[in-house]
Amino acid sequence: MTCLFCQILDGKIPAHFIYEDDSHVAIMDKYPIHRGHSLVIPRKHHEKITDMNVGEVSDLFSKVPSISRAVIEATGADGFNIGQNNGRAANQIIPHVHVHVIPRYTRIGVAWPKRSIADDKELEGLAAKIRKCMKSV
Image (tube, rainbow, N blue to C red; front, side, top):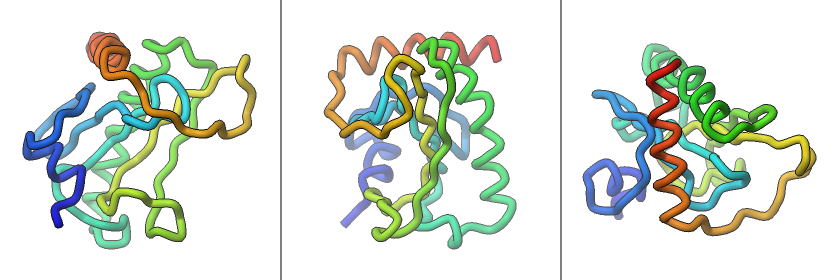
């Protein structure tokens, strides 16, 4: 079975892209914890971060600051969390390395809410706004 992210990268499943280069993409999370929740994903498939070499991990995490800045600017969030899960026991749902950028909002509080399914129209509008902000960071 091909992983969900590999299918997205192959164009077989649609996603809302906010960043792309030769080795990485960032997309909107279809099941966001908060509005603007995004995923930074290497194009090369690795199930866990321990399967990657140091250079690949470094390259992946080098994308996170600029993507995070754009997400925060576009959403007006008050802060953000960075998350990276490895293995089912660590709540890794998709077995392909990815980094979560999760905007946080003071008015909502610090508790982790139950995830919901995001509306595609809202995701595309927010993705366009974040892409625009990517140009300024």
